[in-house]
Image 1 (tube, helix red, strand yellow):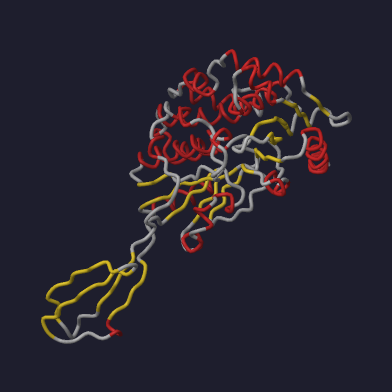
Image 2 (image 1 turned 180 degrees about the horizontal axis):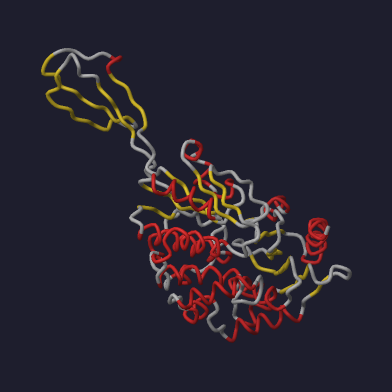
Length: 391
């Protein structure tokens, strides 16, 4: 890590303006890591922006923006890149003198009117080209494949091809696409990696704000210390609390008390849990009818937290599916399903025929097929990738 850290901060020290980004399936872990990095960069006098797309999928699949209100700088996070570069129009005035320039918008054209004090201009004297990019370094967090960055990457390929990229991740599937790839699969979290990098470079800069952001990342990653917990995780947590990380406030924000109606819906869902024999609870699903939502006065917004509870309380589970009925905008009864996986399964690709929205961790899809039919199809589709994980 020390050698990588030297390479990373060598590039950071050369940079004037840094873009911090992560995959478009933004979540608490990615954003809190990005906030910690931005604050640290400010403390070493480096300018940066955080730009992470919201993924463009259903709002209930995303974390609530309110979850970030306790973290410094959260309001400065942007969802898109703008003004990546200026466009320069150059005029060769070696043999002429310009008196004044004005412009006018004519339909779709911007026309420049140049009055000459002396001499002449020709077409060869005028040229146009883009300036240098706004950012001269890109740091990507928690992102195994640059395509997962979404439109930020897809609409600006030249920017990514011509700007140094530092890739910081702990996932085995990372494609090591950066000029500097800090990919540590033995680290339990990217927060642990960032803490090590900060400490090696200038540990005295790690203050309460940075500690709170990194601690928030760890708490989300571990589902409040109920999954993915290692001795290193607990040691780092202790150090961050000593530095002022507000553990109680973070837990209260991420896992605030549930209302009674949500608990009633969860009770119905938990009562309907099913799994396949021979998979040792690796795949678990449940079914909710439209009347379940009506009787409990709840909506699909409660389902992501329900999935979290299942993952927390059944440690062996790899994939959770919730099938539920809901009317569409035309009043038709539709079958919906949410699939969550904390393993390396390409869910969007696996269910692309259903128009799946979401990311590599969680997707939501809708169909007119009866719920019993779609349940069989989805479970069958998931069997092969789940079995491969066990090989």
